Length: 576
Image (cartoon, rainbow, N blue to C red):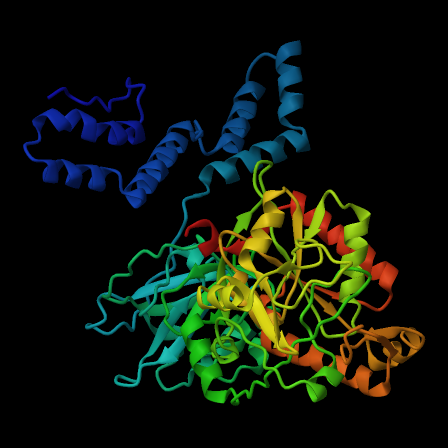
């Protein structure tokens, strides 16, 4: 085996030699298991870090300037005294004059002060009152700035000891590498903590300024390295740690809003994850409830939701009949029940907490994402969709619905509707070919999955208008839907802006337009609130239709960004 030189003349550092060692040992190792062990041992990150630190210290130790003497001022005085006894010539006079100047004397005095001072770090002395059994005690001194220390503590129920419960990723304690989960805390700044509550200790820490000294008995439990920072989630609810009675430490909590993207830094604790907002430059993590914990407590407090059956309307709007949503009047006059391939109860049983997401940007050769528009009857959704279609008929498209009713003289098959027999329609229902369907006046109406595919295959953006609970069944890798909720403004604004507007009613076959009533406004607001409450976690964008022109402009901008910018989508869409 070749010798590895580490002498002064070697050009190769210890770190490079360590990295090359397994390869040089390979011919001398008998089994693959031993070779794997060597690779793991010499490739261990902490060992590499230690070697790098050693090399840096060794380098600076060699570069460190050493003073030739420590008493330059005294030497100058001796020299001046000796020169006084010599025959004075011009050079001696000039040197004596120079040595007597105050600034030169001050310079030599500073030199001596620096030369005699020791600059090696001095560790704090060990306390004299350490018990004999505390042979593994650690004295740790951390410098506290404005940020929290980033550690939580708890009282051990069995021993009564104060122990470190968790270390917040990226916090001061984590960056120091000196405090670990399970360490027992004995003193803070010389104050014993055995008989104190965790809240009292937190107050002591909060009031401390500058350096804080901890007396700690290290945990014998080994910490397993966590795979941190690789997971991103979309929050499906609002969270304020100050209102959470269950959180171990409110100050350590991370607040967020529905739709925020969070980076998970640690899942070591089954109840409380550590996270930070995606893109936040601050490395310090905060506590958030884990998915399992949040689902469990929401399930306990969530009231039972009664889902009302919905009827189906046969409506037209400027030639674009694409919706099965109902007006309030329809619900009173029709008895047909809205159906879907999965029940409404299935959707409301889910408890929205977090969804794992990943960045996604549409590539040039990919099909466009399906755009789903959701909103209550009368909110102006169909008019917005109509304006989009007119703005660029080559870029936007809508599905053609199926029906079992007879074709009228002015209609063409495949334009207003796809006309099929009742038997074929019922067969397609059994085969789950419809995303929505219903019955009106003994005729079926439905939107098929294939009709969506047909629009997308033409390299168009498919605009789909469906009931909100249908959205869940469209959230697949194939469609990658982007869901936009068209929301009504306040009821006062509705009265002001919709005073002369009309609402499409399906009380007769002509789909007559009727003026809005106060009851229509109340119904629209109530319906929007229910939609947002039950299905808001599925919405990617909310547009308030206060002014139709402004709402259309915002909708168009949203579409442009959707096609060109990076968005967060469920991981399952890209890894199915």
